[in-house]
Image (tube, rainbow, N blue to C red; front, side):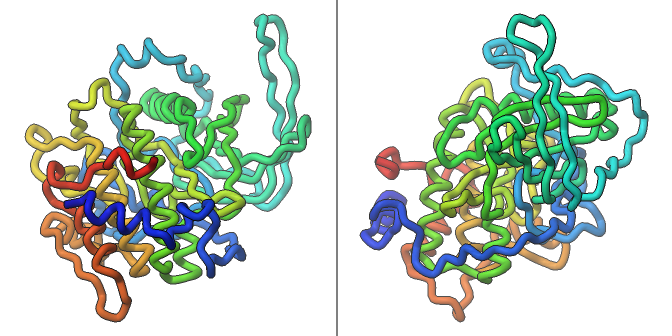
Length: 384
């Protein structure tokens, strides 16, 4: 049944993706730079317990991937690690502080110096960057506009203070994030560029997404038209299909992690919760994600009986599509516990005040199936 309406909905003649990829009319480029109010606080903690005072909404906008090393994430199996390039061996900071380090004034320009080892291993070359304005922040990292003084190219730089990486597990999480992200090369995935470190910080250079994220767009626009939602969802579908073919589950798809480049095309970012499966049949048991977007199988049952796989990303895409059309997530409630109860009961409804076509409702319903086995999967011809 899914393929019956997917082609008519996502491949219709008025879909901007099918007429040269231009943006739908009415899309506003004048997006404000808005500070993130600490979205990482909405993520599920490593033990899977519900924070008693956390809000279930997406706590403010994010302008580049900034969450780092907080929630628990499964590590790729050893066989996978040996088959791929090793992640950077992060040197441990001598600091014993556990609280996030305050990076110098966010609006001040700061010069960053990289000592890059020569290919032959003998000596170093010096590379300098200017850290510009703050783009976004999470609990343990900040992201800034960055300009290379060597090439004058612009990047986003994710800065993780080493004082936040004191524990071995924290360093391993950052290494796993880097290893997965740098292996992904797709036009709708925010490109990983380079990693380096000094005595105080770890630096990750990323593709610069000048137009922030869908989170800022929805905050400004309140909701999108159906042609606009189709435009972004089709690109998101393509990027997620690519990740799944590489056995990667993102596990934190949400408006704040869907960045927009200078042409307002999708760039999926923030792989802090991503995991790579050794086989497509493998399951993960870690409770992780952002409450409004988390799939029921992630939080249902005990650790011995539950398990999740690629279908959690499909669920999140259903939440994203609903949110772009309605202006708020389908399971949003007064607190995290109530949000989880609504997710487990699959309790949501389309507002009568917003016109949404039956094809759009059918597609959302196909992705928001409680049973992962009944959840919509990608038809291969969708992206041809």
